[in-house]
Image (cartoon, rainbow over all chains, first blue to last red; front, side, top):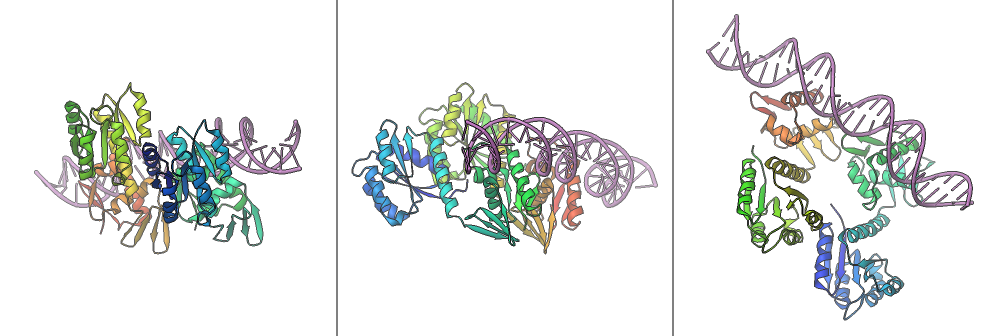
Length: 225
Length: 225
DNA sequence: AAACAGATTAACAATTAGATAACAATAAGG
DNA sequence: CCTTATTGTTATCTAATTGTTAATCTGTTT
């Protein structure tokens, strides 16, 4: 569960703080905590979290206000803000998104949901920050245009195919297990069957030729060096 | 049956404690015991067990709570937690896995099942922690790519062959008995005949040459230093 | 040297994993 | 809303891996 990402959790209730903290740590995140907005800001400044999980209702400085301050600070351009909101206070949902939040999660919090959503958000972020293009062998795999260049030939892959190739090519030679691939390309919200991967591999091979992706029976696939 | 692994067993019933303890010791594990969660934590802190076997229903501090505390402590990142749960309380199964348990075993406990499951779990763990590549003699045995490099020559082994070579090479010079090898490479769920190992050894020798794996008659095989 | 124990080896059988094709469901675009 | 492309599933086929058996070989012991 090698997972990158620092998360700052802000809530005034110690129980909830602990509960969330525990669940996120389990997932492999580095977790920091603060009891209210006022406390949170300096901590955030210091640790530069990838994501801030913010309770809307807090004494001293509420979530909305905190979010506004965060979002107006260019230090936090790369930081996602996710609100925690009681289901009934749907008004805060609106206002929260107005204040610049990237997502919100309703209480009561279910660990699975929490983890899944945050994983999804952070995966998106990581992907955006990832190298925009990879050069391997005679290929240029370009995220910007979602095209594969070989010499002056342009090859168009469908999105999933592209992501899959991109993953394999990100570490040529390394064997990725199907589990690996599912987690990285599909994410853990989705449930797809192993054969699906095989089929996408085949599609890629059809378009590019067989020489790029190798099969290691009983283990997985790799980009051939 | 030189088996690595420290196990802490936590249950309030002395009978069960003794029963489990006896069966695990027989298997070669170092076994420690505690009567409840409160007792267990300091012991766990001290001995750093590889696995904690935790009864769900206990006075003083129940399994779920204990598990949560364990899992929120980074000291125990490398520790597996397995629940013991009466079949009927299937609710605890859910909650237990939520609390971060890695597996659970239903009572009534059958020694075979217990031992088999724990072996499997610990084997997985050991594999995860294993070095990704081994250099011996003129070989580089690489888990990332599942390839053997000799100079700039790449040699592809089938999976079982690879695992077998990897095992032997993980401790060059040490003689592994067939029993050893079966346990580590095949796992004890599977039942294969001894000659199978011989055949795999032969296949490896065919691909790599005879100079790497030595036979110690009446004992087993080793990687020649 | 005969008898034995254990290892090697070849030939074969069983199993399993992956490739592939055809199809179904879903999403995207006009 | 219809059409098309993408994405996902399933069933079948193929090939490689894995496992078994039995004959042979090697070395040891008596």
